[in-house]
Length: 340
Image (cartoon, rainbow, N blue to C red; front, side, top):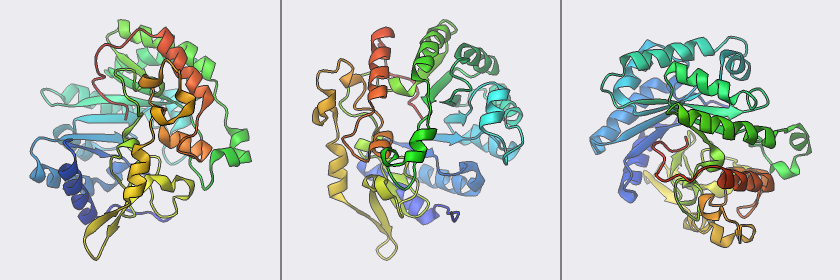
């Protein structure tokens, strides 16, 4: 795959468009690669956004492997940092080695400790975004202690799901055979760790419950749709679709494209309407479900990737969400930080 970087003129136009059509003043750095590899571009985008609006929130999802120049800038300019961080060093180093063989945990730990020591009055939250695999589903209470001792107070966990390819997972025999996730094991340990974290004054969330803090008939920003600018000049509704060219079965999420001649985005209003119409009210499998308004039909990106349909369903996920909805105590106020 050819490496691509978002051009600054498209980024500026995207910010102008988003702030014109939305009341949100929130920008987020996320991509198919590590955002801090394009550090100068991040700085340019943030500086431009501040000229458009002086009251913005900046979020970043990162592998956490960066040096002093980046972390000093982050401290001054970023409000929400989600580290891709899967647990204690033996787990993290196995799941996310640097260049395939070097341990990543020491650098991430150093950076988190540095942020905690230098945060002062800066408006900065550093949290962990955890991919759950067979390496960590049975060690969740241990993970709570580990993150707590590092000074992390907000954690979101995501059950492992199949990667995006050229065809839906339902038609990919090899991927189907390779994918294994012990959902019962995850849930049993998650519920215990969730309550354990609460006693420590720490938030330990699951992607399965990301809508438990309110009622809605849609699950995520893909259904708004919210713009995600891709490095190749498209507008995606979903951060699982990181390139617009040849999006294959995920093309339903590509609803805009930058036009170099007119210097404007050209949008497909039919696609936008189709995304907006995807709600639990339109999904027959949601009828009668007690968790319907606290689920919203689940993650649309995963649904389309695995079923090939906007109206698809992941039955195992439905059962898991219903179980969490029944067993966890009601959440009475909005989450302070949304799932990354």
